[in-house]
Length: 260
Image (cartoon, rainbow, N blue to C red):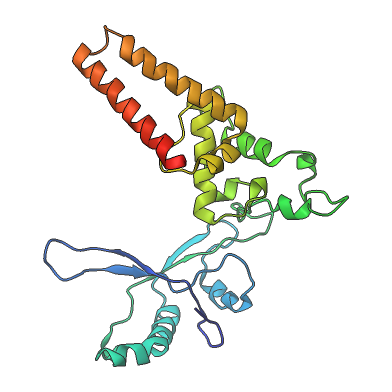
């Protein structure tokens, strides 16, 4: 839910962060994400900007400023007071946080670390005559874009995957932030190492993602690898090789059954 009518503004979907705990001891320090938004669609979040140490140079600020900690704590307790009371908990007894972490990106192009932005080119190119906001990407397909960004240095075999390094909803299939990263990773694994489709991943989804040619090549390479394992006699004892070949066949059958 979102609660941006009062200050300090709360913008959910917030969640509990990591909690330190040793054995059976009571829970120790923890983190609570109270504000999450990736645009200024909630302009009220500008309330937090005065507490950012160096917006143009460093997105991360860790502060113990009571001018932020105390109002934010009071706001959180008031917002959840009824829920606490329903469970017999006195919100007033909860101590304030020790510090607040602010991670705020700026879209100022002159900033040292400007905000990363997914390229919404599937929207920009949906109208006749429209061009991507980035002129250098005119005529670039979604797959070409993702592959180029995912492998900035092929000689060094350096590969990257992140939801901000992708074409949002590329291949015409909108997906969530985490899925975008996984889709890029899967394409890298298939293209660079010819890894076969995981048994749990839908066959048609995977083929559409990596492309028909790469899917065929990966399947052929995995079959060749299985045959090589079954015939090799110098890397592992024969018994282990036989067991590996049997396991491979079993997984292959399970993968086929799952996709049908």
